[in-house]
Image 1 (cartoon, one colour):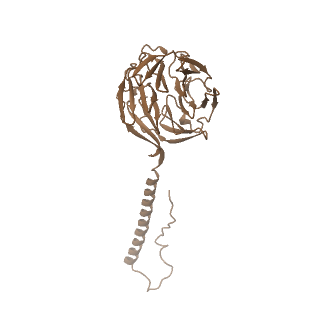
Image 2: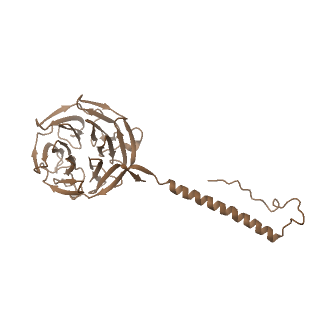
Image 3: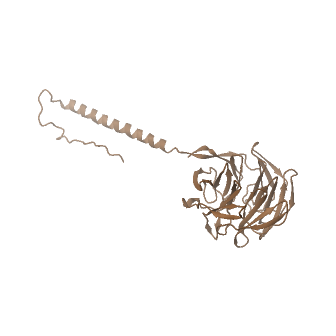
Length: 356
């Protein structure tokens, strides 16, 4: 509250101690002058408060980098727990479960240049959700997950976009599981963590040429499900997720040359950043993480090992979404909020201002 130094005089105080007959005003004249003074003071107060209110209104408009734009919605049924990968600037996505908890087998491609979806050959394995996917070269790979009987799976299938065909490859090297994380570096794909009835932290590398899985260094943090990973400059950055009911904030980098995980800066600057079943992707040397337990968008700088917020995801909050990056844009689609699955597609540009 603003306090103005005004003093209101009583009738006695306002009367001078001595005045001459020439300067003594009539009662009517005195009242007019007093009313003018009161009106002037009230007018000044109104102008001041109006300016203050206008200033406060303007101060609520805040712009931050990182803007979201609605794109062509996914043409399949709404779903959650799908799997995806990117080959030659085309995103491929399929499997998952629908609003009736039915496992899905359909498969789709999204072309950002045309902002259009097209249906492809159904996934080669049985219908499933909570599997995982990655791409190596010109081929994509999807495996693990849960089938219609709630059995945990370990089969893996290779997709060839040139022929629009699937073929079975060697089963995953670890135990059958769901909610694993995956990424690819160079000529190999990597799959690990998840749940096979127990929480896991093992990591396995797949060599498409040899069609073999090899166990590599286990994830550096706790066992978990629902973690995210992205790759920057030949190294994988991974973290978040859930371990035995506790959301995780730790963050690690994997160096495939040294086969080591090194801990980086945790999410200790903001409790709200801890999340499970979020999405992550990398754009121009920076990593981006959002959704899961909240819509805040975080940018990770691997050079400085720092985190900062970039506004919020502008769609509905959700978990079990899929996300990817193509060029200098990130994408998020599908997912689940409570019992409601989604089919919307959002495009993220970290260089454009978002007005909050």
